[in-house]
Image 1: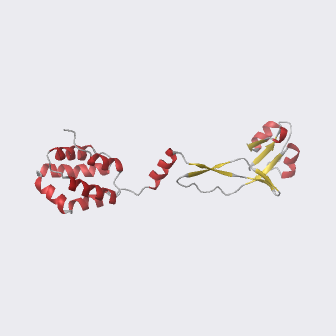
Image 2 (image 1 turned 45 degrees about the horizontal axis):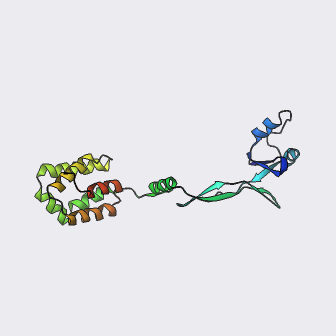
Image 3 (image 1 turned 45 degrees about the vertical axis):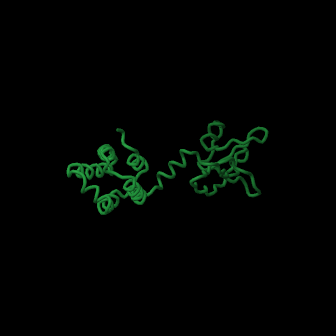
Length: 187
């Protein structure tokens, strides 16, 4: 039950509830669910609830002070700009899930990447595959470490980097992972 309490000089106390009413008037026995007539002598009024507008990426609905209309008090929603943190959270919740499997399959079937794998020793190739599997679980250290060693050894051309970058975006691979594979190796 949404209530508003009119106090001195037309000031309003909102939100207000039955617990506060009973606390403010301890010597009064109020019904379990008081009617508007029960509340009137105490300058307490029911507030008609309204539907909260949906938040958007850039805006948030917050409850404002109710307004008095011809039909009574009405709940009001104010719209404010979303904070950067709220926008980041919005984007993170709605971001498509990374398709690590699709990314790995596409990498394994792309001619330039096949050529790179053919040029590197099998143990490095296997470590990259294991590293990509671990990256899909959140631990990018093995893949990135080997990747940077391969960059330093000249196995990875700028064309190959661009091709992998395109694939990574296509399969919604996390931006931090993409940034790490695009960085030049620390020699």
